[in-house]
Figure 1 (cartoon, rainbow, N blue to C red):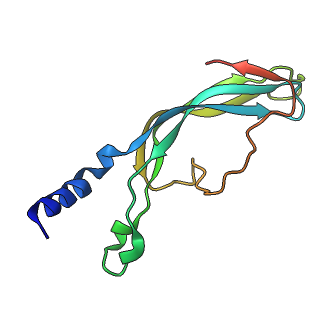
Figure 2: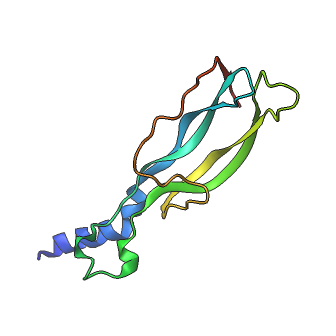
Length: 134
């Protein structure tokens, strides 16, 4: 193995995470309640992007910690609250949602992230839509 190739490999392993393209991205959440007249479209930010992962084909040769598959996840979150218009008095018209301030590559935490690989189209409105700009 040439010294240049070995040095390139070591550099890539050491600084691979810095090349990750994981950052807050604009996203629209659609929120509606059965009792309310309108669907609310909320502009927010989520964590999205590419994170370096390791090939697990050599799992017998590597430490267990080297086999983790990183995802783009939240580093810092703020929560904001929006008012859903057209709700009757007996209904709580507020909806709290996360806003990604910063992101990181790490293990997916199911306490605050959806770690499912399959994409299901559920982010849409069935009622007239109102836009919420925070």
